[in-house]
Length: 176
Image (cartoon, rainbow, N blue to C red):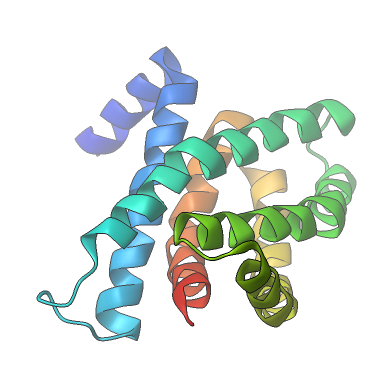
């Protein structure tokens, strides 16, 4: 509980910084899980650069983009009723999720040194499956998130659930 209270104090004092660092830490953790539990690389074969890339993407892309999106979404659809939460989830999953994945996957490809042509081919191969997998997990999570969780905790809650999602995305993005 002391750790949670410290997190809350830090979040209150420095909301953007804490959200970005939380996103980066949990993206990095997702990659560690992907490499160690899904891909079974072992510690000797662990690609530290890949983990650092994913953590950097969390801090520099996922945290700012998703955190900013939640603020925009709350301005577009103010309120916390069940209907408001449903509207937010539909807009999030209908508009934001497809665009986010369409940016995230090629960004990882670019950071991994893929040529534009290879990156495009990888996006065409991976995007449909990633989007369908997204729809199996995120609508229910986001509905609960928008209905039950205050705005300043949404990114942290989503990123905790997203450790599993990040493991999947890391595996998907780094599969050749």
